[in-house]
Every structure is written in C-alpha cells, then in structure tokens.
Length: 255
Length: 255
DNA sequence: GCATAATTTTGATCTGTATCAAGGTGTGGA
DNA sequence: TCCACACCTTGATACAGATCAAAATTATGC
Image (cartoon, rainbow over all chains, first blue to last red; front, side):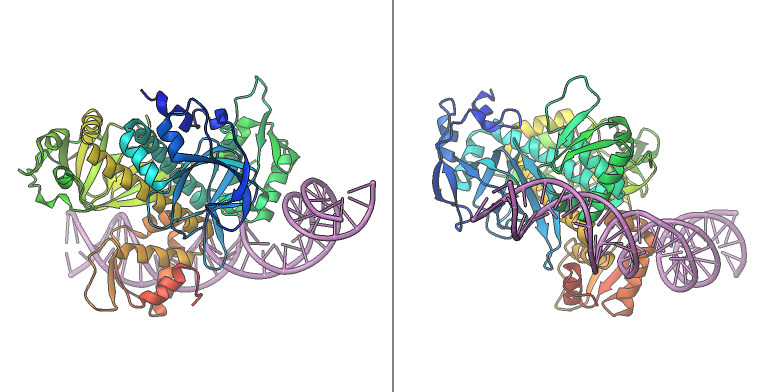
C-alpha cells in the first residue's frame, strides 16, 4: 500500500537510488550563491513524486532556510547534516535540532519560517515546492499519514530536549548528546566500543545544549580523562563505557 | 465540510455546549481515586464523536496521565488547566507545557507515555479511547487534518521554548512567560493594563522555565518594583508596561 | 610543504542563579 | 477565632558554568 512513497521516506530508505545529474545553477532558495543543482529522479520513482520534487546538492555552510523568511518548499534530506536554529536579536543562537538523512523538513505550518537551516557538511536534499507538496498530501493519504507520525516523533524529541535544557547539568547534557548520536548510525558489531561521528563543531554542540564551547570542550576532556570516551578527532569519538554514560545521561551517577 | 467536528475542536470553540451529567464514579484512568465523571454530550454532537468520547470532570491535583504508563486514551480539554511534565530519576522535573481549554492531548504516538499530566485546577476533559479514536481518524480526514495542524503548532511552540530554556536569562524567561499568557485570554478593552491569570503555582512556573521558585519570585518582585507589572494576587497579575515587557522578553532591554 | 587562519583546548576569574535559611502571607478546618 | 499547613518572599552564601585570555591543535590556501 505504501510502496509508492517508499523512495520519498528515506528515514526508512534514503534516496540513494536517485542518480544526480549535477549542473551548476543559481540556487532557487537563497538566490545569492552558486552551487550544484540536480533535477532528476530514479526510474522507480512514481511520476507524481518525481514531478513534485527536485534533488539538490549543497556545499557546507550554505543557508537552506533563512529564519523569518516565507517558506516556499519542504525538504527531504538524503545525505549530510543540517543545523536547525532560532536566534535572538542580539545574536544568541539556539540549535533546535540536527537533521540528517531521512529527516523531512516540513515547512507547511506557518507563513513565516520559525527557524533557520544551514548545511554543516555537503548535503543532498529533495526539495518539494508547496503547491505540489500540498497536492501530494491531498492525493496520497499514506504519505500524509507518515508525515504525521514523524511530526509526533519530532514533538517527543523536542520535549525530551526541553528536559535536557531546563534541568540537566553540563555533564548530563553532553552524555545525553553523545548517546543520542549512536542511534543515527548502524548498530556496530559485538564490541563495547561504540564509534560516534560529530559532523558539527563545538559551537554547534554548545548552542544545541545551551552551553558555551569552553564548557563543551572541558566536559569532553573530563570524560576522556575518566576513560568514558576516547576523542579520535574533533569530529569523531569512541564511547568506551556506554553503561556509565547512560547513567550519567539520566543523572544517576556523578563520576 | 468541517462542521461535524466543530464541537470537538474547542481551541476554536470550547465544548461549553455540552451539558454535563455529573456522576461520582471511579476514575478509569488512575484507577485509584474517586471523582466526578460525566459521560454525555450535547444534542448537536455527531453520533460518531459522542460514541467515541466521554466527558470527565476532575478536581485539582489529579493525575490524568502517569509518566511511563501505557497510553489508553487521548484528551480534549474543555476547561481548566493541566501541567504536562517529564521527570528525571532523582525527582528533577521539567514542565513541557500547560494545556488549557482547546488543547488536544494526543497520545497515539508511542506505546509509552513520554510525559505525565496532572490537573492544576478543576478540569473538564473529553476522553477518547484509542480504538475509537483511531476509527474516527480513519473515517474523518478533516478531523485528522486538524490534529496534524495542531501538532505542527505544538512543535513550533516546543522549539520556541527550547530557545527560552537554552539561551534566555531568568528575566527574559519570566517576561516571555507572562506575555505568552495573554494569548490565552480574550483581548481586553482599549486599556494598556493587561490582566493575566496564573492558575499554576510558583513551583510550576519554575519547572516550566528551568528556574527555581526563589528566582521566579525574585524576578517577579523586581518587575513589580519597576512598575512593569502589578501583582494582584499569587494567581493573577496585571501587565502595566507591555512594550517594555516585550523588549525584555526578546533580550532587547536589560532594565 | 609551509604559512596562516580557524577551531579547540586549557587556565584564571567572574557572575547569575542555585542553595540554604528564615520570615511572611493567605487559607481552610476545628 | 485561632491554629496549622501550604505557599510565597526575602536574605545570605555557594557554586556551576560563563567570560576573558592565551596556548595548542587542526584545517586551508598558495
């Protein structure tokens, strides 16, 4: 029943089957920069979805959504990582989430973008302009149902993050964050050492957890000294003691 | 087209037309306490919705949802205020939202209740058990569409609260909170003094904003001394300088 | 491969809010 | 009416994490 939407629900199956026909064009979103754009889809994509979507490839540091602008399209992220954030007038920033492969960035909610979105690394997205997306939602109830389920999941994640931001210590925040990054990867072999990739920089982590970069760095250093994690590089660490980290994340151990 | 669901979307129109037939019964949710229960609906309620829902009247301090339990029903709040919260093992609490008239507490998401819910004052709710609710959702696409729109709105609110919890000062948090309470009331006459009711106690406010009760109390006292608000009673204040409060809420003025 | 810039780490100090403590205010019941 | 309890406010002090500063490390361009 849901097979016809399967290429467009890449949380379950990323859009890797699409064969990009990369051509430099002017970005239709930001209107200011040049980057690779691809408008094509695989042969097994249903015509309705292929017509409604375009695949784009974006370099790091690109603005995908300008905070406060008018939403024109929604995005299905195929690969790479995007930061979603809200800002205060004086520049303070809160990252409300990281979106990677399989995340559907739905912007049909309001007449104004409540958050901004920027690429962290090289990102491939499938873009759905709203008139076509609305039509797809109306004509494909199973697609709409899936989006609703994801929306529910996002809300639960947001509520979990409220608990973190309002009531957890720096040490608990970092532990929770590192553990949450495991889920985004394939389950590894029967080793207790769990590799975790952190494509975002310390500033992003700090703004996601309501901390400063110094506190993030210091807390990671403490966990490293205590042999709970090993810092392989700035963008990848290994979890050496998952159980300890889990206890730390829920405030059951001070270490 | 959407007229048949109108009695069940009380954000737009509360269920005041329902005539409660209050009878003391054992609560089917908490299984432990006695309180008033009403299973009836008004004559203009469509049969499908009347069959699927029961109206309950609950006293203050009642547990509506036990955190971590299995969800059995969703609730449409008719009157009163409910606190929604998450807890850490050591008792730290984060209130993730206050739900009042018109809020639909949808719990169809997961096989476990991710948050608890308790009545703050006397609360009337319409309860929908899940088998019937699922049937309603499947057979009434407009009802489902409305729920999806509300879900989107809740997510945007949650993201706004993340910004507050992660990046705002105590003064900014309190200012934002007081302003947010205006929207829940009828727009008042052409006076600059805006009454705001706070049915929750200081402890609830603190756990909602990621503060302590002492900081909440001190910050309110400061705003009072500066003639920005007037504290009528513990549960109601007047906003005397809305513009100043708005600037404070977004961090544009330190006072 | 080297120079330079960007990012991360570490150290010293400061401060906003938490914690600890006491007193005040309102409310409901005997 | 008075007591007892729950809640709120105010004060004194402590501390987790912020801020300021500088060194170490990593990334980038030529």
